[in-house]
Image 1 (cartoon, rainbow, N blue to C red):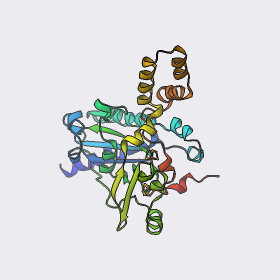
Image 2: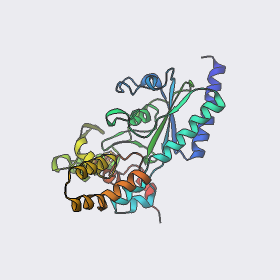
Image 3: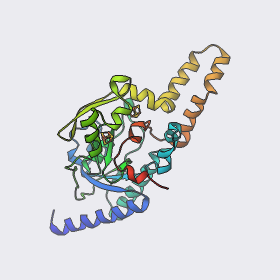
Image 4: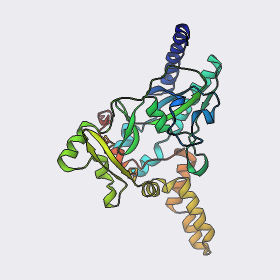
Length: 288
Ligand code: SF4
Ligand code: SF4
């Protein structure tokens, strides 16, 4: 690419950052589409958009400080949502196509086959330098902590940001805690050896041997989302007693499931209790 073309692409990138920030994004970054070698087959940018050059990542739509303050996990489950960040992604995609004349595809927030996302958004966020993977699972941003991510695949050859060199997790507080009592805030919240889902250790300031019981976490996290809905329907179809069928359909669990699906969460991935304990950017949640 010539120096003039590079300047042009840098100008496009600056303009897109402004569009994204105006739409509400807290962070943005660009990943090289060719860097997704570790992604599963079918989840590589080129497979979703032929000729894809870069993946534009936006992060934001965090729970509010008040949401974190609420002791009700049900409240957090039904107010946190990834659809706002998806809408931000659409704004960027539209801008790329209408103003710059390149193809752009916003990754939908739902799942493709076998409950797999269309693209691994966590990998995209990491490759775009928006944050790094954490012991608890989500990609954490050093300045803002937990957030949702959207990704836009594009044929626009933007300058790439690349992954961060310094991991956000473990936070210094977690290293100190681990040195003192052998655990971290997230692991202590949901310890895998005591019926929880998380485990791992810290060595030389980095987390190692991460253990995550995805099946157990899923049954806790997805009880009021699409899998819970499918399970309840199966129970209803199998139930021959009319009164018991009514009990299932009018239960608070089923009602919450319908609210969750129809009103709040486009994709639900956390019960948030491990993230609630995480110190990364926790100071931002402290208001009056
Ligand atoms: S999301 Fe909830 S169930 Fe899953 S690891 Fe975190 S605390 Fe445990
Ligand atoms: S609590 Fe500490 S170890 Fe756990 S995800 Fe947050 S920074 Fe990482």
